[in-house]
Image (cartoon, rainbow, N blue to C red; front, side, top):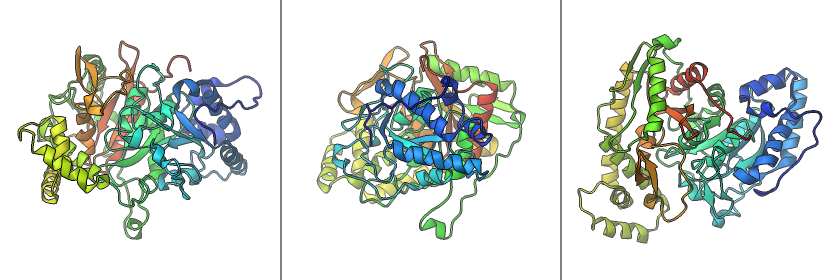
Length: 499
């Protein structure tokens, strides 16, 4: 095992092919199949990027190079024999630190879990390994996966490749940074509060938050836990939308008890051409103001699509207010934390909740009340959530996708002081709470909807931004297909300067 500063330098033949590491994973898989590249060579290219850049970025925080080399050699033998396991056979990958990788710790950034060494791989990771992907390391996260930054006392801070003074996002921040710098070609992350979507947006890569329950979560749980929390999902990150679609073909499907009787069969999109597409665009919200530089890129995308799609609206929305959607999301999101809280902590939350004005809907009162919810109160909040989910489903009778921001702005400067809700970011010349932008996380996540992040260019500050593409429940391939079209027609991944 190697720590975050352990660099490697593999023997190389001939001139380094630096552009190789930024190709899509599917293209790399085709090159491997056609014998234009070997899995061992591809692993070497990614490790060269790791050696050159990881000390500055700190994206990959744990490696097992012996296991990776053996897997790459095995892939080359299969490819030579024409026994390819999948389009990703022999392609280099990493995974978020919190996914169990047999023989290596899953700490979730917590020093108390440094000895939590699993004996099995997470199901999602195992599905990628069964497809022939070559896993060489894990990528960094925030403590308990609970931040839009990626820093912890075990592995330190991960930096954004576009500007190392800024966050790469979280909690799959190391995942997105590793992809953006060519250290890996495939990644698996998780998302309860935009933890796939936010890093993809900040680092200029692709990410997909699947429909709730579609991708197995077992092996991505705290020690001693077997139940999956509300809202949270596992899903793929990559440098191309087509990579995400292909990964979903491998990752989706039930396991364990559900697999005794349930199967997942995600439908194909109802459309076959861009001209058939019905698009709604949401640029801003009274709950979370969006920086104008970011809105301008969304407007540019909307105006581009307007000439190509069947219909496009800047006003169409589901039938509930942003304020109610946000309140319901924060209530149900923060209620998930009570699973790990003591009775004394819950009692303290009940006492504190009584001190707030009942009409105060700011974050701290909402969070505190969520910690103190009775079961009956949770059931009523959940009922209202499902009523709004029905409104979303009715909305998608008329619209194929809703395009909206992933966050309030591009990546912001590191700020590790105090609690998350005490930190502020600049938006349109004002300092606003980092928590407000959670609205954009819950707008799809709280209702179990799939959403895909696709890069849509740079703002004048030279930072990437992405569009969030929301589709109806189980319409994963709809949002993914739209991301593919945006990539082909409007633009996609760009290599950060200096890599």
